Image (cartoon, rainbow, N blue to C red; front, side, top):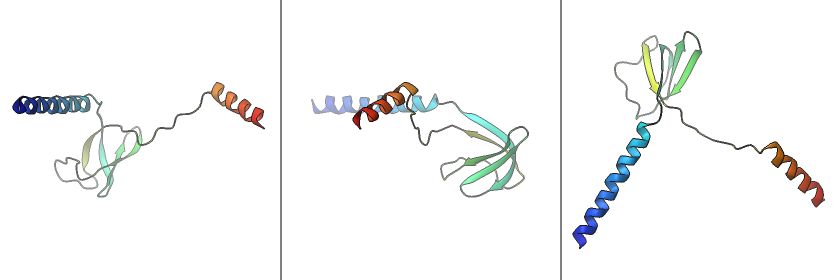
Length: 105
């Protein structure tokens, strides 16, 4: 019985890991190509023909192939990640809140 429970738990962990990997794989990837104009341990600034300079953050988990240096032409693959999200009130909600405040005076 203990063996059956342990196998069910392991199967659950495997399914959860597969679903997590699948969700990450579906996140759209983008890329930008151009020469490096500025380089630090935490960011790469790339000059593009049409959009000016792109500043992209990097960390210890960033996979780098070749030698990074200013002037080198690179292609950076990246994902967009939200840092904060602020939900704004609808105009109707704002008017209702304002009316409630007036009535409360």
